[in-house]
Image 1 (tube, rainbow, N blue to C red):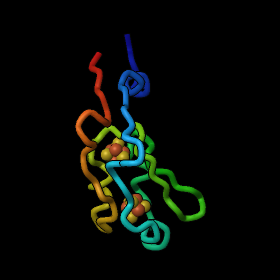
Image 2 (image 1 turned 60 degrees about the horizontal axis):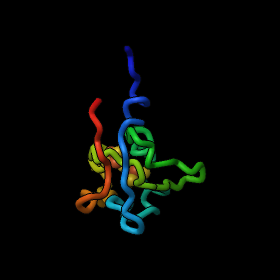
Image 3 (image 1 turned 90 degrees about the vertical axis):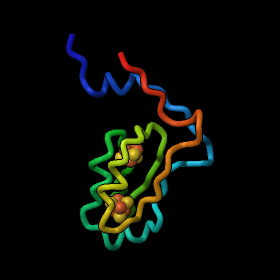
Length: 96
Ligand code: SF4
Ligand code: SF4
């Protein structure tokens, strides 16, 4: 049976640590005024980053897979503050 990526991701569960996002954008004005490519909005496999259409980028970490891609892709600006969620929170991978 073929299973696509979306179906695979659906098998994971995410426990939200309300009010304590483990990733944040350091300076949103850098996203809006300096970062022309806004690659985080394309590289994130969980679509946590969204280009708002007015130049701003929003980040909602619910569903984050902790892959680290956003931190790496933002290396030019170092505008992503990234740490793992507290123990017991975040992505709960289910392999199946
Ligand atoms: S790559 Fe970095 S600077 Fe660019 S939009 Fe994303 S968070 Fe902002
Ligand atoms: S760590 Fe990966 S899944 Fe989480 S926000 Fe960054 S790119 Fe998206």
